[in-house]
Image 1 (cartoon, helix red, strand yellow):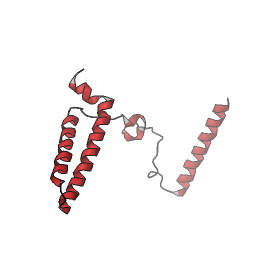
Image 2: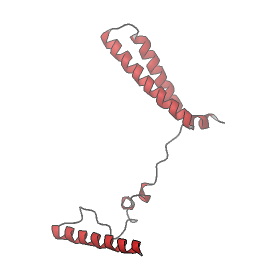
Image 3: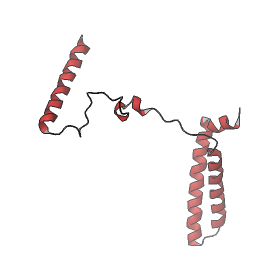
Image 4: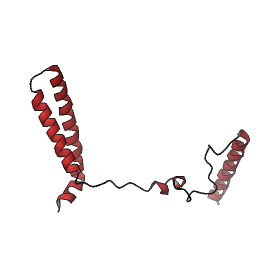
Length: 118
């Protein structure tokens, strides 16, 4: 098992979330301590910022996240592949056009209901 596969594992991802959360929390508390001149502010900042540095170092080995193909879900996102019948609400200009569109939708719904009953 290589280092990169170890970094990409589910348990490692959960560990990264915890390291990031704790690092940010300790850094913020250390910053508040520093502003208020409380003791141990330097120590808290060193611990918090070191944990964040380790987090970002290890995160650099995980690689890019894979984005889903949103055009499979929303075909209107891809130009040229969208349905010819698709009209966005901005394309519908007047109230009479809206009424026509609503009637078309009602007819389609009725058609689907009758097809489902068959």
